Image (cartoon, rainbow over all chains, first blue to last red):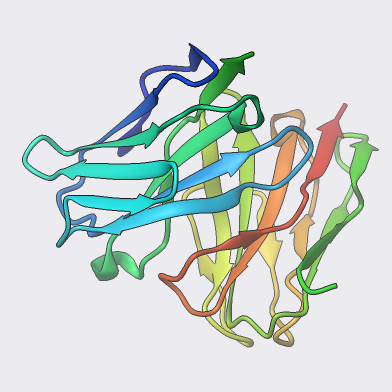
Length: 113
Length: 112
């Protein structure tokens, strides 16, 4: 039972354009959502998060949007840079389950110069 | 340098052998976690610890055990390794449960 799903295993965009990574979830108890970025041979690093009381959170080139009714969140990167090429994991947690993270499968983003 | 260290970096292990993956953090974080990463499955939680002296089971705990004798260390033990435990293992820590997690560099384990 995959509660957090990233349906696109990979995404390729041109440098300077917008990258949009999507994530869907099924557990309505999730109240906190995070995006992590992972480079090869390194551990994931925290990128940005959003609480369920918000529908948008922005940090520089990165914006996360949350649509609770659709149980969908997305990460927008604009403008995309070659250094953004990495695997992006969506994660969610619920205070009622001890706030442990449930991760999606990951999306490999490639930004072409 | 503050952060999380994991050892070994990689290991090839014969099936049936016992193996302990080590994890140490120096950030005085209360919560620690062990995940495995498998292609197409993302990161799955094996075990976690809210604070020193307590542990809990995650999504895929079978075949693994952990201990948390102190704040800094959170070893993961495979009592009798099987090929399905071939994976990349990540240790993580957080100030408390629910806070952002910081990950170690991972241990690549191959069970033959």
